Length: 150
Image (tube, rainbow, N blue to C red; front, side):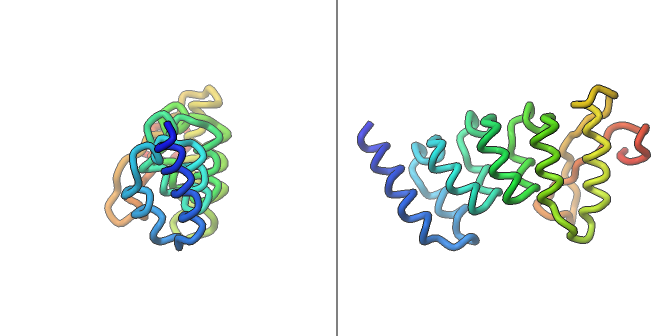
């Protein structure tokens, strides 16, 4: 138990010094106890939302932690547990965090329309890889009611 606490403390102290582009490597190379430590992963995703990919599975289902990740980088929703990918508040925060980058408008429209699943009109959100899209993520609306999707 003391070793895990020490590993977490070391991670948190060193994370403050790590530049954003090295956070994923830092998390990947940390002991598994760090990837399962909520405080450590929350600190990492608060700096780089994509670090959620390397969190322990149970943390990917932690709504507060996932909200922190998608607030930082909306595309981090790709790594959330399935039930949070269908959570209205989480998805909306992810959309809001995507910004005005070219290509995000159509994607945001598809995801917004797809929120129908959580709003009860039968639409759904499902990740599907698409070549050339940032982080190989594409949210395809599986409803034709919105006029988007496949």
